[in-house]
Image (cartoon, rainbow, N blue to C red):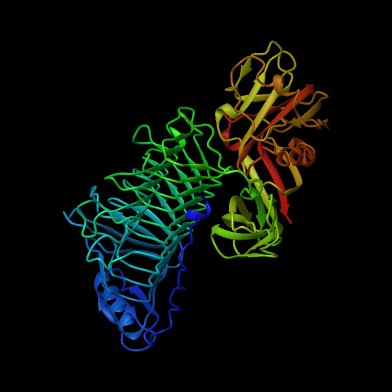
Length: 627
């Protein structure tokens, strides 16, 4: 049975080079703060006019010349209430400066489709490295990027953050019986918070949707469906498509939906918390309608689960119709944790596989790195064969370019030109072509030495616990440590910006004297051993209960404090770097977490609290290095 329904993805042609026409590239720029734009070619006079006019003109001229690029720099390109309409263009690359850097936007309430990218019969088109945001009231057929017909299209590294309906659609149903939308690729895109489907393949075949994130959409995450019974090409299926390595969360309906279409491959996707808006929908649903079958679809190496406290996703996989024949379900899917169950099978001749499984891939826990030494990536890949097993690191998103010492090695070092947050992906593919992927988040800091001063920031962040356990958080002074009896003092410093992996070279707390105190005093200073110290509460023994899980105490015998307002060496704790290092090296520490300093002992030194003098409240001073 498996051999009879094997799927072969059509070969997707390489995108145009962007240098075919002597006019290429056109560079689009706004004229001052006006609504006038220019599109300046590589040679020849510029085009001037509205954003709609100059880009449509550039695309037509590039098509006539054999193809080429239209480039957008950083900034917002606002079409207003208009939209681009492209008819029969060929070989054109629409290229921005990156997701979030280049934003193509419009907003219209017109009772017609107002897609920013409205393509009809457009072949070998590339759209990359930009954000599309289409505004306006709900209209079920007005999308962000719409290809009515179109083959060998590449959409990569594109964010869709607004639409009146769907995010990206390839529609091969209309026009005439030779109209099709085949052999296209959507890769490494981010579609979120729109009212319709994330990505739809409608009467479209041999397409690839790979490495995308789809979150919070109102419809299906990915929809693969036949045309309607009344379409120009009625009941035309979407066959031989591949949906691979995507992350789909909180789809309003099913995460992936196949309707009356054949030999589609759904592999290595992570689908969570579907049926967010419509009840009783599934992670993956394979269905049939209007008397048309859905034959030979393949489902392997997916995770389809519900991680919510109140679950909504009914089944990991639901094959709803006996007209769905010969579905292949791999043994390497994970369908546990859903509201109703793992798999519901109403299909005919469904094959539940045993044998070769997809590789198991773990990219590692989220880590920090620096611009000087990079970040050490610690991946894990296992596989049951066959050989060869090929592994590859890639960049899913980030502030700038990333270089890998060896992108094919499971354990390697990533190098970063700029500080920022990056998502890196480790993919493994076995000798049979089965693949799996996992992502790791890397927070990159500037290399070198950093000095921080973190003051007490609010009344509740310094407190005194008396002998009977009562905790006071509003005292004007901090008696270290004897008031009427010995106390436990707590000083909580919030949002300490020390990254994981940093080396703490010095740390101390600076206090300010609020009274003259000269009695012999011997104190012990330590940190609560917690990756994010909880707030000080008024509950009994809230501070002393934390002493049992704390760092090694540092002894401090401060000299007499004879001057009110003094904030010098005598009011400064000894070095606390070792204790703070222990805290920030813990597995639960994250940059921006809070730390709590505990002071115990005998004797008395009186310092300002936040309530007594906020400007003179205790300050944690830290110096750290990123290698």
